[in-house]
Image 1 (cartoon, one colour):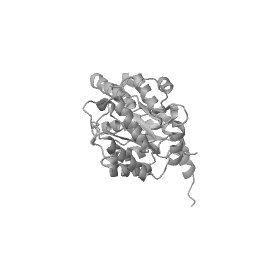
Image 2 (cartoon, rainbow, N blue to C red):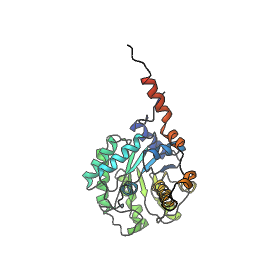
Image 3 (cartoon, one colour):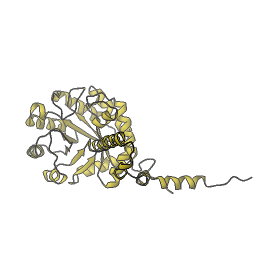
Image 4 (cartoon, rainbow, N blue to C red):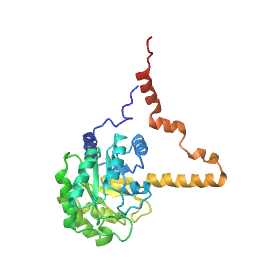
Length: 304
């Protein structure tokens, strides 16, 4: 009759953060697919991944906006809270540049902690930012990003909350400069470094050899980085990998094809074998457990 884990995750935010840190230190690559919504987060958990990622690009795209810094802190926090509520896994969220100056980055961290996230990443792009795999990016100087990180560290109440620093400098200043920035960010208190837009396996290896704190790889499709396998990233010594937009691209591809079929054929009949069945959706939602819970509470008769 229990609905534990359905209405809300049973693991506390502190426990999820501890699990994330333990995973990063375990020597086993932590795999975090991006969740388009809370239901996808639950599926990620069921299939057996190590964590869930909330992509800023996906939050923007769901609002029919490009990933150029148009979303607000409130929108990102709300989506992060919804997803964290739905899963027992740790959730890492994209916090862009911290939504402004170092003080804004500090407030961002406090709100994400309150929302139950396990960690966030802040990047060294100029605010407003743009997608990390597009040309024309600009980065702030190292000292400015260090202030962002230090501000975030200073206000963090739960030391388990993972602060990840992302550097976009590879495409602008070169690999060596990106490595130097990563070292400075680690010295400022970052727990994890996100190496954005590296162009080949050799660059991943060089970054790993130079930086002595956990590293996160971004395996996004159609970008500047080759799609390295989890086994390869593990062999390279990376600690975590995100697949940020994969589920959105899968879903939108299927939706677009389906809508075109309906527009052409006038019926969805030919699409049924491509759909998640109603029974599978109900299973994922825990419909039967809700029904049993409801019946157990309200199964009584009123006396005369």
